[in-house]
Length: 159
Image (cartoon, rainbow, N blue to C red; front, side):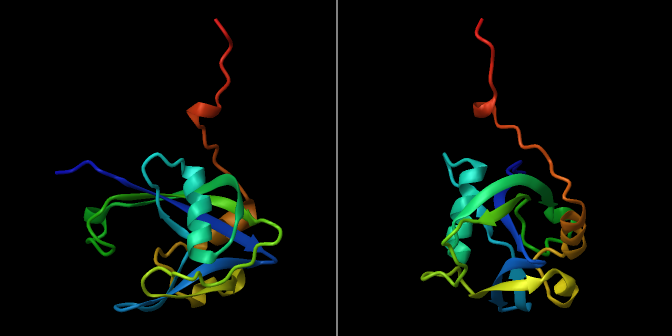
């Protein structure tokens, strides 16, 4: 049995009570939405991955803010509904940089059909790949962040 956990990084982009989501026409589930997110590449920091995924999936440059929440998918605890890969997704609060506008990328992900601003009040009316609408709404209301400690940013006193 493999102990591998796939690490994914995602962007939560909220503006004027709207959340930016990527739209997919899933062959099994139909119309489904997700956050701009994806796997962290070798030699890439989690922050670099968030920026890359936002650019690749929503065509936006983002300023990555604090860690909003983490989402874990454990296949055997979920009847393998999203596949057999144990996954940890780290979701960051992001802001679109000035002069950057969301749109479908020139080379979209497979089955990706759009990039949409969805009202937070209407989240229950859409299907997200992970059913975390209530957690997202709770986060936007309380704005409670989790510290991300990166070893390369820790300052040590000289011996």
